[in-house]
Image (cartoon, rainbow, N blue to C red; front, side):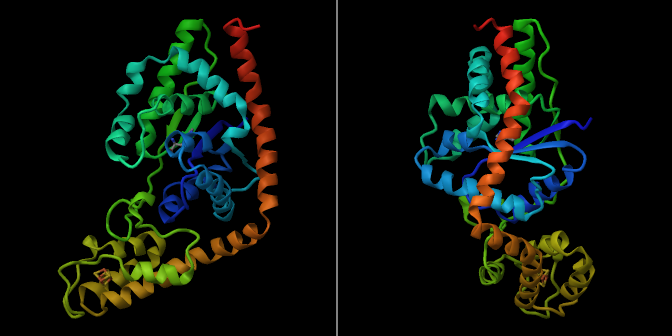
Length: 327
Ligand code: TRP
Ligand code: SF4
């Protein structure tokens, strides 16, 4: 029997190269080894983006189109939408009852988001409970493995703590302890050298046209000490170079030599990078186009995935309700 794995993404914007190398490539590889559940966390998106319901609706489908274009396979994995499975929200309520406020108020991601996301009012009851819903997502499937980024480890730890508290109060071990899968992924910076993110608008989207990719690549920051082409460059401080390492490792040596010997100018180098990125994106784009034309197919995949997800988690909710004595 394969171990069960669950992960999710919030549909708050277009997916970009950072998602590709940070999550999607991994997810695609994990499909062979685990019984995979991949979820669009639309309720989680609503916890902070409740004033933009249209965006969430749009990106729910759009993100799944990207998943499928990047190798997620509905035959091998269960792809579904969180809000289609009421069990998540029901378990969320039950877990809310036993989660001490202090655990949530102390959560580092909570404090950070309140500080940084000034454009939204996050002082809501729902947003405080964000990690409780995430715990419900994981525990309702009795998932053993959760591939996440570094930033989500605190939520995973909270999930384990909530599971232990549940066990302590109701005297039964219902949930296995979920373990995080942290894969080494290259850190991909945005075109302005800050973390690639929707909020900085510094990303290259999987849906960008070849022309957009060329324009964005041309704006990338390079070695600031380099003025003329003949100045020897310093690849280790150049973001363009790190993109070559990530997206075309075979070219790394060559770019390094050309750059350090002052044999290639940055404009030319960036043009070559755009070519590389467009090569990587071409098959993804092709699948995206195909799927965008057949959105009903995508909806159907999510409907079928929802059925499988429901089957996999309904028993847990029944078990838990019985355990706490609900009629
Ligand atoms: N909070 C996660 C993120 O922002 C998304 C998410 C929701 C998730 N539920 C999950 C991830 C369950 C892993 C497991 O990336
Ligand atoms: Fe960066 Fe390429 Fe310019 Fe060297 S030549 S500094 S690697 S963009």
